[in-house]
Length: 218
Ligand code: G6P
Ligand code: MG
Image (cartoon, rainbow, N blue to C red; front, side, top):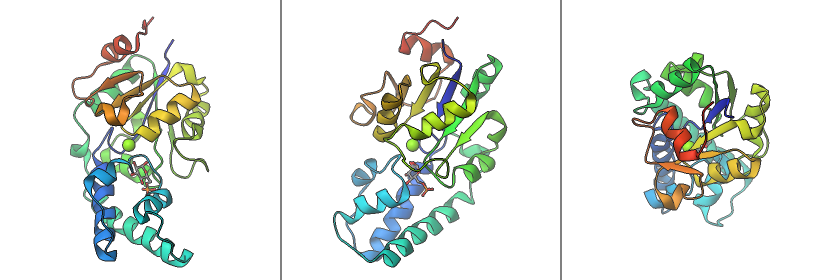
């Protein structure tokens, strides 16, 4: 029995994954670090500090310099998201969120980003969520299951009744660790361990998700 869906934000509902990449890329260029789009694939779903650590590849810096670099990247990211409007929802996202609500089920947000609240406000979809869990909600981020467990707890539902929708390897691992059925969006190399896989939410309806997850809806 499925009663809710927990959506990741960046790369699932909107393409802010691209803005995170551009923010890190600008910082990396300024500091003279090599950083490619391929490197960035490993940063999907990874919190700010851990992302910087992966970019630094073992180089060490004093804490104030680390904080300054995290803040600088966030400043670039914040400038990008000022431009976000409801038109930046990825194809199929609003339709699916609305369909889930119309069916009497619940939606939650499960994003590691501290900027998730601002992004869903700008996208005009805040009202479609029954619970929001973000970068402020838990200490241990994905691949730990804590963020999704926090969302399920806010909904008052057990993990087995909440489907997690994710674009990141770390997010699929978090779902698995918490006992949540999972839908992965993107290439097999990234989300191959999900219970069901789609290229994106474009044209995807609840019936498609149930079928792929082998779930009978009633
Ligand atoms: C999400 C994104 C990551 C980002 C993380 C923290 O998980 O997929 O790319 O690093 O959130 O975001 P923040 O906005 O708090 O820096
Ligand atoms: Mg994501």
